[in-house]
Length: 407
Image (cartoon, rainbow, N blue to C red):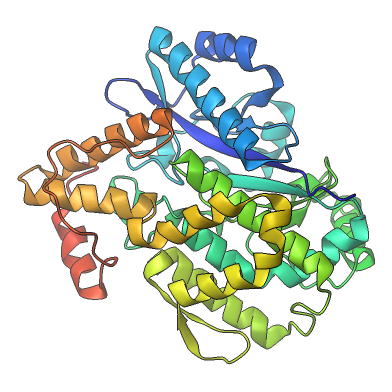
């Protein structure tokens, strides 16, 4: 029986434990102590300012919650002895590209040699979810049909509203930064495994890439595992958000396998509209209006989410993800990490904090929230009801008022 096993990977920023400022060099004693306790679950990343944790193959969301909580707990405990903290977010609010240093590994050297400055100026962290699909041809076929749901999953995960000390006007800036890299964005419209393998073989034979792991699409067949890998999502500050998004992706994979008619007529027109939906997910997240690919009419995010949850309802009980779906439905009302970061920043500014002080407080709050696995109390913030994301008019003045943050 196909159990739809899954695994979750989270990328974290390493920071100074007191100030939450980004670290440009990987502290070797910290990494050695953490790896002694976490083993192969913890690895380095291409930039020394980041690390990654990865769960083993799992069958339940409860196990995923426990695993990710354990990793963050260990990293926090070890970090106290070394002055190191971690932040789970798509971007570090204060990270500067020119301060990034490459981790010394042969693979990373190959990547940076090919990408040049683009590779080193990209300090971004993602949430990656693997779902087991044993048949290679089926992985490619359902990858093609699941692309329309990627903007929805991105909107639920947004945690990257700041870049280099500035509010970007986007809730999910990480994807915009990632677009500078080759072989990113949505997968090409391959209809079967043969077309996909021809593409990869051509790149390999031409000496462009060593293998398929250098194809960094938002959704891709895994080379190392019999899985389909979700990559579009920002790293989530709250563990429950990560696991709930993984659960919905599992349900979508199962639904696509059981319903081969799902998006079977996906065309170039649909692809163009999904690209527009991706932009809207980056910009407005759960506050956005999207294009329905059946009616071609605008639809609110909440209506879209409700319709997708109704579609996968037959799979929820089978996978045991009822609590995850309930949690997902609460995210638009509560707000994603990006919403909460911006609300805290604006609240602090109204409270009299300078832009530099406000963004510093947001960054410290991200560290404590990451390490507890949930959103912690925010100091010095006036209480208020969550408002929709910034309008075009308010963003311009907000950016102008914040131009001293990175100086």
